[in-house]
Length: 147
Image (cartoon, rainbow, N blue to C red):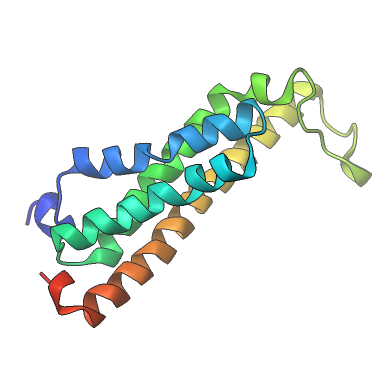
């Protein structure tokens, strides 16, 4: 079975949907935006993800949206890494408490970036799973959304 068959849409569409979340990442890293703009940047992409998946009547909305969330997590992680210096303006996060000063600044940065990368991946997968669960429930509840 081809991936398009199991996900209900080609990978390029999955990547395109995930990319809708990148402007929020950029806005987050480069400076604060107003609450209305932030709400649009947070919620519009996931509403579009859900709408497209239900409109396309994919065979397994949960799996498809989990894939979108996974790709979103990768894009989130890579974007945060690319904007790291701009986001922190020369003051990157440091270890505190008993670990403050325990590592060289270079090792500390590698550690912080590694955890930030993992956190971004996890965030994307969790967002995909939550939206996927909603999509799965809607597809079960509304006959027009079933494949």
